[in-house]
Length: 351
Image 1 (cartoon, one colour):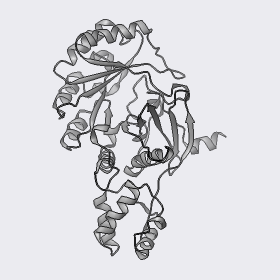
Image 2: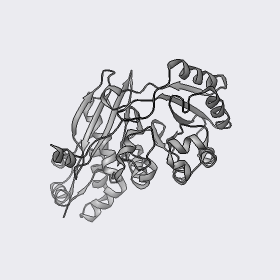
Image 3: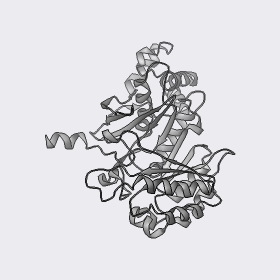
Image 4: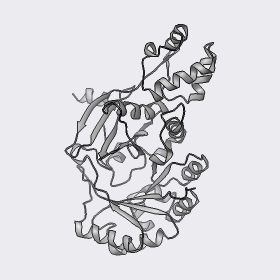
């Protein structure tokens, strides 16, 4: 019988476990502090825990944080981390430094089942959901790779998979990350959850009172084009999506991020930009324009720079904060829409 991984348990669950093993709830709080605050994952190194409690823990549980199988550095300073999970599946995380800011892009699923036409991850299909421990483990593992005293400053759930399609594990991971006393201690304002537009999930996330940022993968300004690019639009069209966005609770200075991959002759005209202005009317929004990142077999192209800047100019002229986000890690297959990892099993068979 496999032992449970303590990483991925809420501090309250660690307290309950301590009681089950005959110790006090205080021992569970100590355990959470060692793992989530001090990044110590060896039970024997948790020296203020009684030896009999450590022994009981070791018999029933493990503290398991993934070690990257590969670390791929990019010329722009970003690093793609490839993890092999139990069972042989692979996922990626990406560390992206920018002066004092270090953003970590985290995966929530192995593959993705939403088949967006411009995204290489969608070609994989969905293999499985990640556990809360596998999600939190990416952050803990990435932080261990940084120089002493540093850690990722911002977490974005924009890696492999659709976060809101793995809802329970996502929310549990976010609660661990944002617990101010016994969790990892991130501010919710430094965590962003991205979605292709799962309206029930957006509404449900808004009711959790997590206060995290919401990012919408939009990529089109008409239902006809968006359905062609993103099959999810058949279930939740632009009207339903924008209504859910307007219901999402925001703090006074908080905005909803809209990701917009720019595809030549598909969604990059001045008319598209004008429709986007109308679509975002009444929304506290920031738009990230993402020039398409090429991958083998893709049927799209990146628009010329002049067309990207003309699109941005329309949005800026309407008072919408808009940046052109040149993705980091394009040279190592770590840019937006490029994440795809073969399973370890498949690699062995092919070799």
